[in-house]
Structure formats: structure tokens, C-alpha cells
Image 1 (tube, rainbow over the protein chains, first blue to last red):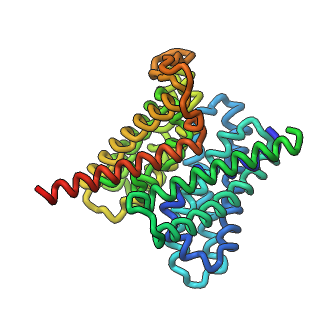
Image 2 (tube, rainbow over the protein chains, first blue to last red):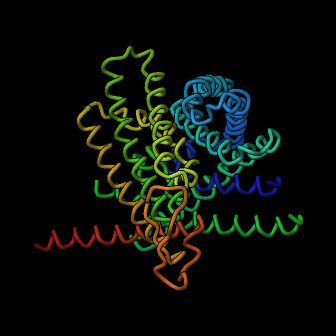
Image 3 (cartoon, each protein chain N blue to C red):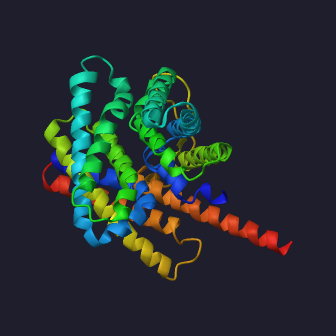
Length: 194
Length: 202
């Protein structure tokens, strides 16, 4: 798998998983004044999640023939580490913003999803590609939640029929984003001769 | 409760997520299996949460819940792979999501202190999730490929040809999945509002 495909597939994965964006919209709004910091947190957690799971899978589980237990092992080993790291990151520079602490669990769980998805998608790739994919996943999710958050606010305030407001409008927006990303993936793949 | 069927809500979304619906429902076989596994996992995780809260010290509750839900996900994977390696290969990416999704279930329902009510909510959401997976996978496969695949055991999947030409191939893509889901959400909302209007007129 080439890097461009990895990048955009990861971005798409993020969009597919913006699922969690619905649940995190409140948290995102509370962080909107400092979205760069939020992106940095996502980035660190995503990369950490991937690296831990990659080493766990490729150095321990696969050689022992226990690859089926990846979810089990990940939940027992990586999750506590990830929670500690998330807590440390959020504590660093904490200025008494309760919303950030309140969203710790959701952020951690969402990052878990990315980590698990990425390792599954890129199981045959190398560590560098995986880290790049993790970075792009953080960027993809950050941008997707931002775009959909903006769309959600506009559609709530706009003149859409009541049946389309809220969830349906956001799902339609997600479909459009998925199409654009798929088109960009194809176009860039052809442009790079892949 | 009515909204839990198709309209995204914090319980349904944070609980199990859209990702399996978007990614694993391109045919009926995979869609029905992932729906069933996720629904069973939801109920199991809720039960595990209740038991662990009652019988396990608070300090160990999270670790025990994690271990049991992850074990359930691994066991589900083995069961599906034994039944049909072809289906397991298709949904393998999404089964680990079950573990992480189940993990945060406790957070989603943490304000709901009544155990019986929490179980009822989990079972209701699981039933709706299964229904959505069934309907969505049927629409996507018939509309996108013109075929229908039953979740039969075996090393390969054997789709039945229903239409000579697929009317809407885009339904097989993730974007098509979002579109179909949005359509279902609109229909659900229209039906709910019609039923509400009829109820008021009677």
C-alpha cells in the first residue's frame, strides 16, 4: 500500500468513524477556542495507540500464534497505558477547564477505535506507514469533526425541512465528504502513478 | 426510544458506533452477522457492567469489565470464523471495535443507576441496531450489486442473483452507505411524525 493511499484511507476511516463526532460535538465546541491543542492531543494519542498495538501484535502475538487475541491483549495492556498518557497530556497545561477533563474518557475511547482500526487495516504495512496513517487519522478526524460540526450548526439554524434536520443532514454531509475523499484518493493515486 | 432506531443519538453512537454499519454492511451475510454480534455484545457488556459493579471492588471494576468484554469479542470472532471464514474475513476489522465500544458503555449509561433500566435500554438499542444492520445491508446489496447473500456456513459466499444489472452501484461504497442511512433516518422520522399526527387526531 502506498503512502498516499494510506493517508487517504485513514482520512476516510476517520470520517467513517466520525460516528464519535456526534457524541463529541459538545466537547469539540468547548475546545473550539483552542482546536490546535486538541489536534495535538489527538495526534499524540493516535500515534501512541498505533505504536503500542503494532509492537504488541507483531512482536508478541503474531510470533506466538495468538493474533486472535489482539483485542483482548490490547484492552488489557494498551488501554491502561493509553488512559495514563491521556490523563498526563490533559493534565499538562491544565487551566481548570472542566470540559477537557470531562471528555477524557470519550477522547481515549475514540482514539482506541482509531488504534484498533489502523492496526487492522494496516496489519501488513510497516511501522513508518502506520505512524503516518495515525497522523493522518488524527488530522482526518479533527478536520471531519470540525467540518461536520459547522455543517450541523448551519443546518440546525437553516431552513431545512424538519425531517432532514440534525442526524439525516449530518449523514448526508458525511456521504458528500466520503465521495470527495474517495475522488481525491483516486485522482492523487493516478497523479503519483500508483 | 423511538428515535433510537435510525436517528443517531449518544447511546447508539457512543455505544456501538456507525463504523461497522458503514463498513460491514455491503452484503446481507456480513451485515446480519455484524448486527447480531454487536447486538449480543451490547447486551453482554451491559450485563458484565452490572455484575462487575455489584461484585467486584471499584478499583478493579474497569479492568475486569475490559477483560471480559475483550474476551467476548475474541470469542465472537472465533465463533464467526468457525461458522464461515469468508464472513469472518469481511467483518474481522470491526469485531475488535466491539471491545472498545463496549468499554465506554459504562460511561454512556453511568448516569442511569437503575440496573434493570440500564439493561432494558441496552437491549432495546441492540435490537434497533440489529434491525438497522439487516435493513441497511439488504438495501445496499440488492441496490448496489443486484444480489442477495445469506450467511451460510462455509469457506466461500454464494450470492443469489436477483437483478441482471445493479441499479445503484454507489450503494456499495461507504458514501452510499451514508446515503442509505440518511434515507432511512428521514423515512423513520417521517413515519414517526405521521404516527404522532394520527395519534393526536384520534
